[in-house]
Length: 166
Image (cartoon, rainbow, N blue to C red; front, side, top):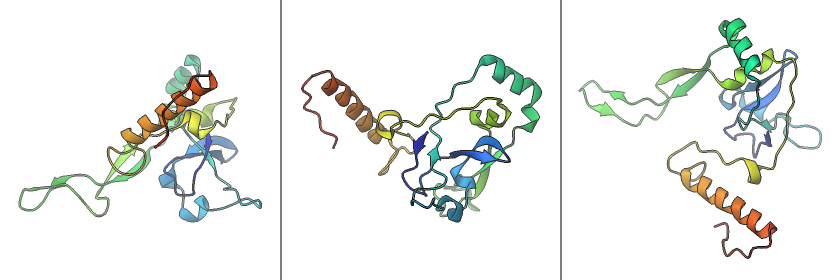
């Protein structure tokens, strides 16, 4: 996991629900819950899921054979292109106009008898790709972050690196 960068970061959180570990997706957490803090001011739900999981094949086979029907769907509200009344394709919607039902690999967490979480440094382990263009989580930001990581490794090995993270 990485610590969430803000309450609104589009990343699920690993937490306990009914005494079982699971990921609660960012779209399933109310704004008030996402903003809750500990007495020291740190976010209460800050264990950001970066989807870097390790499972045994036997565990996954057992869940698929014994618990597949218990894996719930997540509802994702989406802006879906469609045809207007005149038959012309409508590309952009101001509000979501459809839903997508999703299941995720981490939905198996509640079936695990043993569970551990390892917090890593964001700048070393996490640079999400979520949008094709824009200001964050794009191919360009991923390339920038990967270049910065490789530059850090080279500098640690004593190599002079002209790259700056801009």
